Image (cartoon, rainbow, N blue to C red; front, side, top):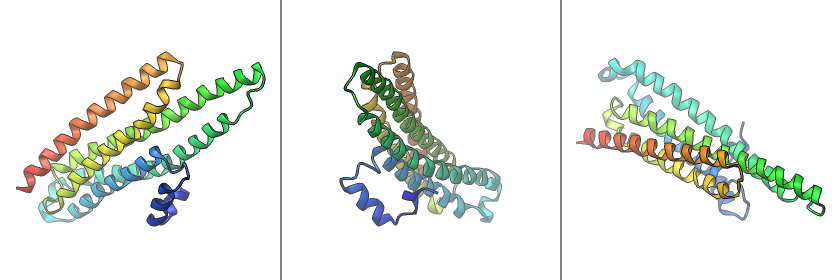
Length: 210
């Protein structure tokens, strides 16, 4: 269980607003994303058991299962992001008095930067899965609560883009050109796919609100 997940919401906000470096951008993005996908789950639960939506019940159940899975993964990623920052800070404090120490610190720094980039990329990828669910549910979810599917799409996409800022700050320090190219391509894919799905979800929500 995540320690942060067990905090009161008030404490999450207070610690995030303090001079403590964690929870930082990546973990806050994951926390925000969990609220977005919670809206998917809520509308799914409000759709199940309703005679009007009986035909789509199997699909809604599948969406619900995936939504709860995403929430669980985001909880893990909050802790993972915080741990990555702690590891990065340890590397920064490594001695650099001799050439040998400098070389070891530099090698460890490259490892830490990659690891600290992989985690927000995974957070963003998980956010994309949440946007996908919102797009799917926008077409079949309970019309009386469909606006909250739009909330889910907007929030999850915003969390995806905010998590990727943690990628942007790390990439310039990584010397492995192949890694940087792969990470940059994945970043672009995530942004473009999430934008398209968010727009589709919101358009369907707006259509069903009329």
